[in-house]
Image 1 (spheres, one colour):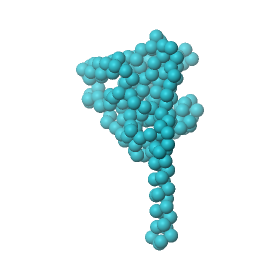
Image 2 (tube, rainbow, N blue to C red):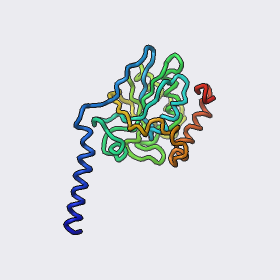
Image 3 (cartoon, helix red, strand yellow):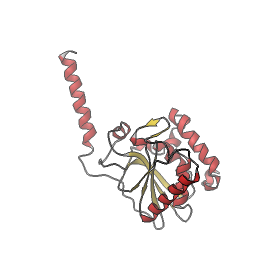
Image 4 (cartoon, rainbow, N blue to C red):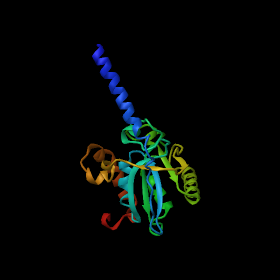
Length: 217
């Protein structure tokens, strides 16, 4: 390798590293939500956030679903950082829901039925800690509900392996880049959507017909 190529290679490494770190040096721009009266938040990670978002967008009583990053310590993570495993964050979704229409328990039932909670640090073709299964509970009631439900699932024999879903107190949620939001709807013919996301959505539509928003019935 000649001197010019070596110098160029070193420059690219320094530049890419600086870019990867730059977002962590500014203000901590985590998502802050002003909830309307009666609405609540749920935060789940279950592999690629495109899949999880697409499922919950169809749930009656869900007011909003956004894709992002949660469960890690780094400030202002980017998709490149998270997807390359350079952070401790997981791809996640944050759900705003009306508990008078759909309960947190029902959201958990949908969540655990539409991904594999026995796969450690992966979902299907997506491998790495960033694709882990996780529930980040927002209060003591959510914690009690999810721990009880996981125990119930484990005793039910529904899964042949142990549930490895991370259960942890919610800390922060960072919005993913704009092109990730509503990805399933905006990119119906994208290869991953066709082969991975669509089958999960179809499974949800089949198993939870009574939970669908009117436009999806």
